[in-house]
Length: 269
Image (cartoon, rainbow, N blue to C red; front, side, top):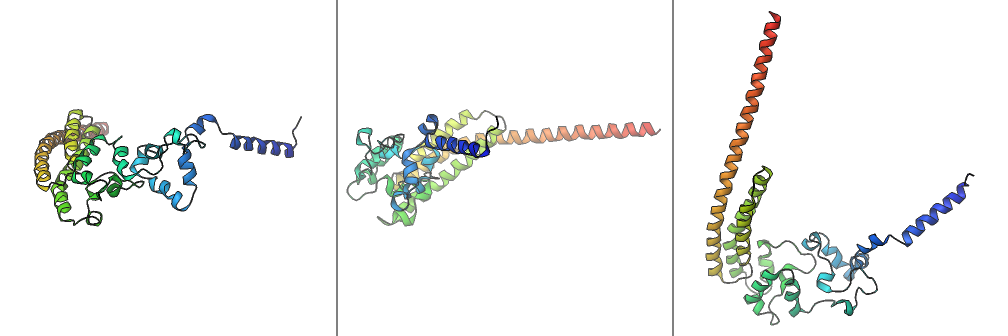
């Protein structure tokens, strides 16, 4: 029996309505109700989600509940203190919250002049790094506009100048390692050495002792120089290998061309 078009259309409409009204459980479990709710709001309440989108935290899968607590999978209990919701953290608690992930960085911060001044007019993590629109940490965060909000930029500028060369070296070497890895060479030992040097360098980011930062940066640069020499040696071998391969291919093609021409010559004769 053929179903009338009008009835078929009504059945399709009801089916779609049921799907929208009762989404699959698996899909709903992966949804973050904090982002869903605040992402649909305008103004002050919606701004945090807009700032968070595209941040390093979004890229790394760090969402609202990591800092604000609550249950991101339950709309009813999303803001329940029983589920750990704390709302906006108090300034004195911010380093502890950030330090749950950034353990070493938190230790360095608390030992610094900035950390010791926490609660006494000194900066917390969000003062320099922001709260929602967080970018990857780099020396760009040390700038006159930010630092001069609390003090003169002179010392901060000296600290930054001492570390610029080191950061540039590390970035360049990371690119070299990536090139070598793509060339099929094992880079694990060099990656571990660079990782260690980079971690030592990052401990200086919260130190405000200019002389110490200058001396430590110089020492790290010497260590990086040794790693870079190894990278350059590998890159040189890879370059020579590519040249040798190109010569071999070119020679083979030339030989094939000569044989082809000789055969054509004999065929004519």
